[in-house]
Length: 119
Length: 108
Image 1 (cartoon, rainbow over the protein chains, first blue to last red):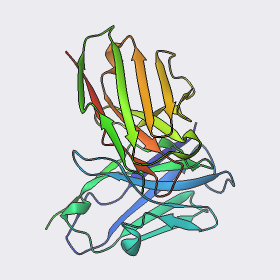
Image 2 (cartoon, one colour):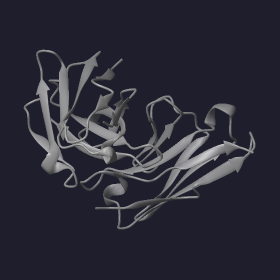
Image 3 (cartoon, rainbow over the protein chains, first blue to last red):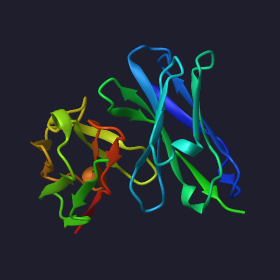
């Protein structure tokens, strides 16, 4: 059964870079059938797609965040990562990683990790 | 960007009652690429319905989805205690992929 687990600092200072890693188990991140995505949910707000990556390194991002987002993949570790720079309090959210099917549907998701932006 | 508006924001019902949740899109969702997720506090979203009306693996048949174009509905026929949660619609037909703001189904 495929499982995803997010990891990274729970507290980031304003103007710094948020860095998270998603570790995939129970399946290979190098499968040609899937993309791998990041989604976030600010407290009390709706879910927002951040961006996705293919095992080859090809990425797509939400235009609203594209200028600040870097997504990378490490197939040797079965991991993919998110970097979001110049963070503000508005970036405080639970960050989820998920598998993205060819239809672009997200399933399954990791448990999520809360990242707070505060000095 | 396709905006999704869910209604109502909160639905107060008793176990055994029928729940009807609405999701309206700002423009037509291509190929009915509309999904519904259930989320409980502290947990990841769980896929219930995809393609507007297909149940995901292991989802009970009391959950059903319908609709096309811009108007979609999730129906739970006979609420079980474990169904009280938040529900989100999600369109995956047009990038950027977007989600509704959610409907919370609470115990009356």
